[in-house]
Amino acid sequence: DQQVKQNSPSLSVQEGRISILNCDYTNSMFDYFLWYKKYPAEGPTFLISISSIKDKNEDGRFTVFLNKSAKHLSLHIVPSQPGDSAVYFCAASGGRGNQFYFGTGTSLTVIP
Amino acid sequence: KAGVTQTPRYLIKTRGQQVTLSCSPISGHRSVSWYQQTPGQGLQFLFEYFSETQRNKGNFPGRFSGRQFSNSRSEMNVSTLELGDSALYLCASNSGSNTEAFFGQGTRLTVV
Image (cartoon, rainbow over all chains, first blue to last red; front, side, top):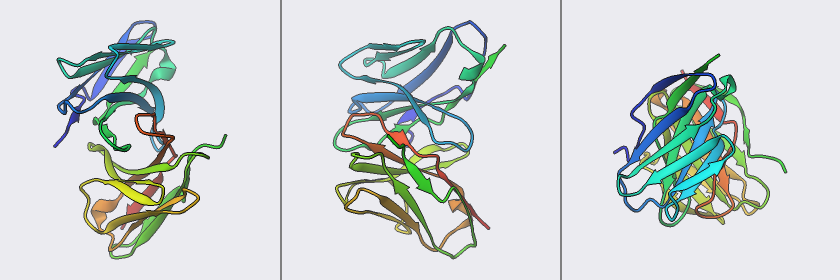
């Protein structure tokens, strides 16, 4: 039962343009959401997070938007750079402890 | 501050054997979680330990077990290895609930 879904396995964007990665979740108990970036054979690197009490969080070129009514979050990268090429995972948690539910990832390619 | 350290980085085992993986969390982090990553499946939660107690458990068979020591270091054990256990095993540590998880580089386990 995939509670966090990333329906786009891949995305290609031109350098300098905006990259938008999407994520949907089903569990209304989730109250904390994160985005991770991952290179092959390495552990995920934390990018940005958002709590359910907010609808937007910004950190430099990265902005995460949360739409609780639609159970949807998105990551915007502006401007996109070739070094952003990686697999991006969204994750969610809720309740006691640190059990994170991850999506299956979106492979982003930024074309120079 | 040192990051999350996992050892070994690579392992090759034969079906039926057992294996133990080790994880040292970031200093001061008391929560340690384990994830399995296989192609197409994203990251699947195995279990979380906090102060030497298992706090959450994912949907994995009993062949997968873990423990945490008083210094917060954690080990994960897989007994009676199967070919399908071949995966990247990731360890993450947190400073508290609803905080970002920091991941180690992972242990690549290959079962032949």
